[in-house]
Image (tube, rainbow, N blue to C red; front, top):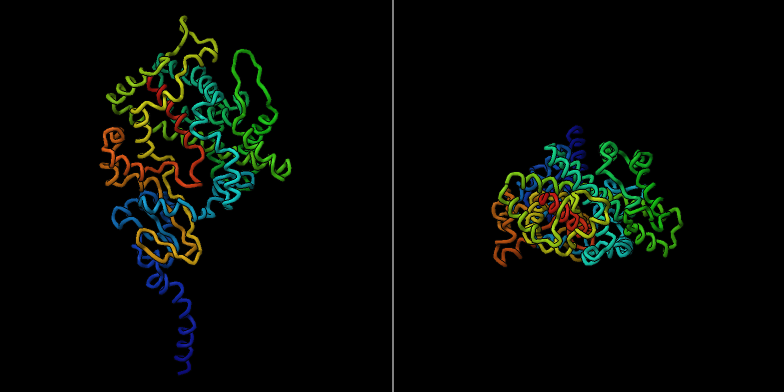
Length: 470
């Protein structure tokens, strides 16, 4: 009898734990009404942790949404949302970023825009540099026009021309990464302080190797590593830059660096703090600028290489540009210097108006979004519970996310979603185009969306067009 009493007391003592960790999350929590990705997710996050560790989470979650609907439970306090209404709810404001951003994107021990958690600080910092990434600014930026002409006509096109003449293969991804880095670093720090990865292949390969190490390092290891030191040295050079006077090579200002430097100069931060804040922000832009654009360009070239008819169609459209894209550009067939190139570079606005080029870029961003995984947010703790796609009373502190990969494969918005069909953006009826745009999400949305969206599109438009034209 005494033994039975002890067992009964022990079982009774464990009832609160049983209720908290099993009964409540599985049958009583508001999340219990949401379809489960796996039978274990109400009580433990092990299933989704394992899928992420194995690199299969994105594809698995997409298949689950196709089978279970727009909202799927991934863990005891995590859900995935795949709907246009869910996007507006989650990313339209009120949902803070998940703290995992700090683990992924912290540079120099200092948060950049992408991982600043405080909304007011994020808004203040963003205002310091958002104008130099605005579409109207970029289309009219003489610095960007000069930089683009220099890179395209003195570095990029000669490489393509030589490979074409000598019938040599090119590593498209590596070359696209080089172009993205040279363009981004030149816009950040000025052309004289930017990289020259296009020409310096050995250092490019060395840097890419170091960057692959950097992505796996701890914050402490990064601090003593080559990548952070490399970026900091470019920041110091940009600070010292006033004007560049070097022969016939036109110089450009450190546009983004100067804008952020001037904005922070008005704050109470010390000079040392400002340098670290700027370096953290600049490194984030360099990483995003070279990596995301390279992924898009590579997939675009891959798809075009399989469809010669679309290549011909794009070439015909590019021939409508004035001035025409010709390389080499002078009567002797040799380019002397970048100032020659600037007079033969179509305006950014004329390139922006090419419908088929834009359709090709949009379709590539749809099918091969550079950031395809989820962008986690946290439901707010307030007196008014959260409702998402009909699921009510979602408590505060729940991780919610949507991903471009899942959204872009909605067959109702994008028929035959696994096929690369640029024509869909030109031939769809007006209502269908509106629906497609509601589900199109390669750069995120809301106040914390990708700051460099317009810069990325303009750079990709130019490089893709010139690549195909040659």
